[in-house]
Amino acid sequence: MDILAEKKSRLIYWASGIVSICGIIFEVLFGALGSYILGDGVKQYTITISLFLTGMGVGASLSEKVMGRLIITFVWIEFLVALIGGFSSFMMFGMTAFAPSGTDALFLYIITFTIGALTGVELPILIRKANDIGVELSRSTARVLFSDYAGGLIGGLLFAFYLRPQMGMVKTAFFVACINLAVAVWILYLFRSEIRNLVFHSTAAAGIGVLLIVGLFFGEEMAFSFEQKLYKDPILHSEQSAYQKIILTKEQGDIRLFLDGSLQFSSSDEHRYHETLVYPPMGTADKIDKVLILGGGDGLAAKEVLKYEEVKEVDLVDLDPAVTELGATNYHLRQLNENVFQNPRLQVINKDAFKYLEGYDGFYDVIIIDLPDPNNESLNKLYTQEFYSLVRNHLIPGGAAMIQATSPVFATEVYWTIDETIQSAGLKTENLHVDIPSFGNWGFIMASRESIHLSDVELPEDARFLTAEMLEAMTVFGKDEDREIVNREGESVSLTPNTLIDPNLIQKYEQAWQNY
Image (cartoon, rainbow, N blue to C red; front, side, top):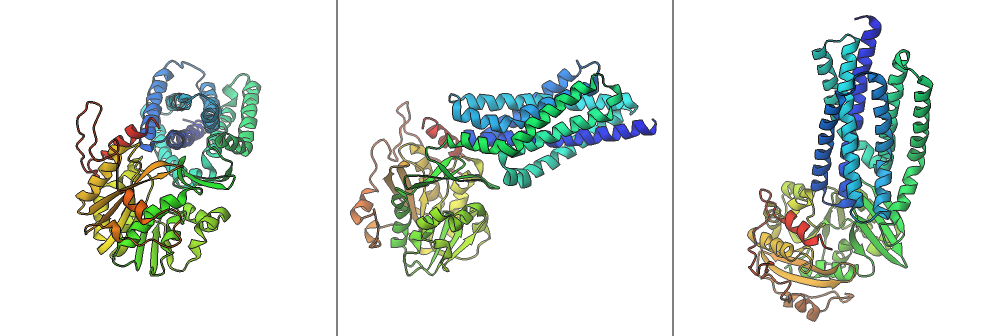
């Protein structure tokens, strides 16, 4: 094999590695899009990865029908990947905003399969081209596959640690598409002597490049207008953190925070939620010197806790530093939380709640668990017997905990399964629910090593909602939301604790909320 052929073969290996990086980025990007827009991250990642790999298999099978003109076929495949993949995120937001319900999911799955199929055609063509140049088939296959697998690792790491948090999903798609286009142009130039109508192909590349550059610089702004359609009120702040999409909206004085599309609070009624979350455990515990808040990165629960002068130390553990930073710096959130992050008694710890409790040696008088609902695997572990055992182990005798536990009306079985799980960890419970206009009827579970007596609770004088009579009434549940759950066949449903080994809560949650 002469020097020129050796050089071309090396460049083919580089090209295979680069397009593999792009392919894996598109694969995980589609999973992230599905998770954010359609919900249930585990389900969406499973579907998109399965479709992508199936598409690759179909593409690899179709590649054998490409009998000649391998290079120009590869170039046009890259053109298609660049166009379809580049506009995928942009179009997904547009479909979600304007198309009928369910169309966006179908669109995402078709795009995923299509890009997977195109990616599946790439590698066999490059292997055959390397073989045509003079490289042994076994050697060319091994080298191209090595470049493919190594590129997959690099692509996954790039997406997780740089592209998604720094660029967001729209810019990432356009940026990666530009790389696909660059590889096509590079191969087009490298094998220019073999290509007819070079001017035509070059002009097509230039036209696609213009579209992608426009999308890279202006697509996110247009997609933001699409995203605005997903929310009732004007968006004040939009941010894609390393963990989630953060949206803050405002309309006629009502501030709302959304994480991955799920409402976290409305300023018009958040006091109902946070007073119920904070006041009962604070009023029941023997002492309240040291308080732990898990979640609550907006600072609203911490604001209520720090109204008690006896509190000496509050540890607020929230995984996402972007949320606590927003709570500490955003004007609107600072007005709501009364600049609680400037209070010297508050310490912010950005860490996973499960890992924090695993590594912590001390005890707390009060533990307030203000975490999102268990709608994916990552959150599910924070609603398990193992997690509540950690809570019990860090709750001092005479202490009290309060857990937000979704809606006993909309997700009755989920609520009482959480209660069963807490009890299985050796804690005694008291059940409460309250009407919150922005959420509906919402449930809380109070837990302690000892029996709980809500009649002993003393409420702050400046409470806007809670009264002693109201607190007692919160423990009364209607027949259709009580622990005696009845299924459609009229048989009682037996409750089993949610564990890491048997995460039964996720499926129950999906089924409960699918109609709301």
